[in-house]
Length: 380
Image (tube, rainbow, N blue to C red):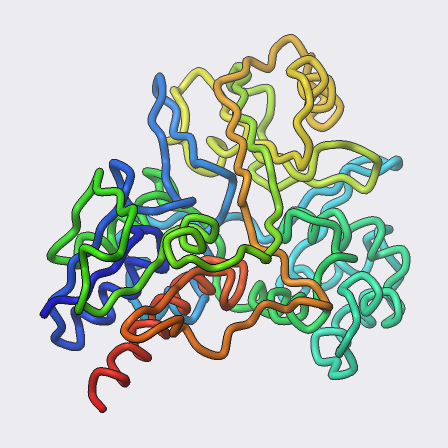
């Protein structure tokens, strides 16, 4: 009797592949016309638009386990970040590669940078939020000038809403591996995993589990659809974000780096994606991807981008705007959300990043763990 996996995001793909590799017959059902969930790419007028700006970390354990990076034409991003400050653009990179640059940067004192490095090994984090823990470590100016704007882009909420231990775990993950993107868009990662799975049904929404009576099921849809399908109450909070895609004439912006700001702005981060990956835009245009946490009007975003990039606001042509209502689960100090078991009923399991960690690694891990728990129960 085949196992049913509902949902073709990273969690569902990971679950299905784990089961298939264990010798199980698997059917995966995906409601939309393609796999990937929140990791999909759209191709529009010569541009590649990822549905929400995100990089792939090649050092994530689950990514390494899949050995998928060599298959996706992966291009590494710059490890240096540019910060818009009242005293100009300041750059700060990976301290392992740019030690002197980091020490000389006015974004924070030498002592504050050492304090941040110390935080990565701190064990006194229980009950604290990430902002509180970092400030108590002694990172005051560095936190407000760099860490807060950068981490807001990572978690899509203010760091004061994030559990410190969870935040520390995510920060540590940045040190391992390289971040980057496939030349054909972030969705290629999910496509590469899906290519290994034998039985996938697209355009196949599932409204009721009764049709699969007697068959083991893993529900790996988005959180709210999963809760509805399983008859469970929704209590996990999610961050909402907006991704804006604009283009400007090529040559006006030459940076390949992610840009954040220490000043007040609705922009969380912005990057000239096609400078990193020329395949993302026609040759005469530069594609700009920008993240905000609030929905602002088009004139306002262009005005902000003009300040960010020192380019006339009228030159930013809007291509598309994506609203991602459930972009990332929020793991707060009062509700870390970590699940000890994927099982929700006899023969029924669930998977999703909201059970493990708000990352690609978390989604892949949750799918694998749900599949392994199912296999263990089936073997008894």
